[in-house]
Length: 328
Image (tube, rainbow, N blue to C red):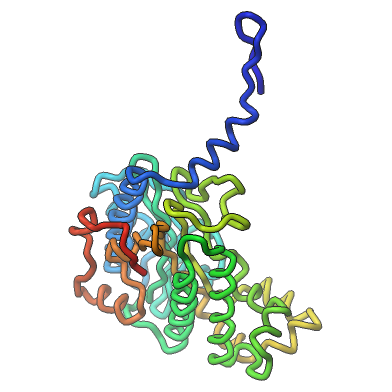
């Protein structure tokens, strides 16, 4: 838009928004501090919710537990509606109905984050409602964690985020082969060319994070053509899901259908899906994982220990940590 000012001059804002968006992509130390506090409180709330989970509760009860924990710590606003998906609902991306009852054998996927001074965390963990992962659930959870670790190894200044996305997808495909879900005779390159990865992980690896949960930059919420830069804050969130609509579409695709082991996939649909999401800030020599610094465990055995009442993490010392050091 434009405005006429005294003297006949015109003030135009067409250049302002893209400049502001580009500037917002690189966070100051003060902004990182706000995001770390949001991560600290949100991380504690996630683990409080695991401990509160009991089979038979409704998804909205877990949403309430998360919100209560955040409010008890002084953060009264969430950055976005809580996603609490139990069982098959974990395979519904951006599910926020949160009305179903949690079953004894369900995995529960919670994607939630609180705001501190308008800066939001965005953390996802998937945990077993009954306190222990079933064998198939553990396989899926471990596959997602392996994919995330492969991606995080490439999240550093000068790197392209798309390379980390590709690395995560290649690991997921290898783990799907291990589980017998896709053809072990096909190469990973062939599976990627057929877009089998998109059947099981239809979303991207992550996005910018800040004042908005999908924060802005000079090229939108995802760094596509711009190398990662110190001060960028991103989510890293691979997932593996058994989504009926995508599987049905793949079954009709002459290229994809022969590459998927349908009996195995059918036997795993009850798992629903798993996503593991961390928030990281790019440093001068790598990245600092704010979610891990907040003490939010993500290995399946560690999640089970928290649910059984064993304490862990470094919540109290987080604010004293130097985010210039690498942490995955």
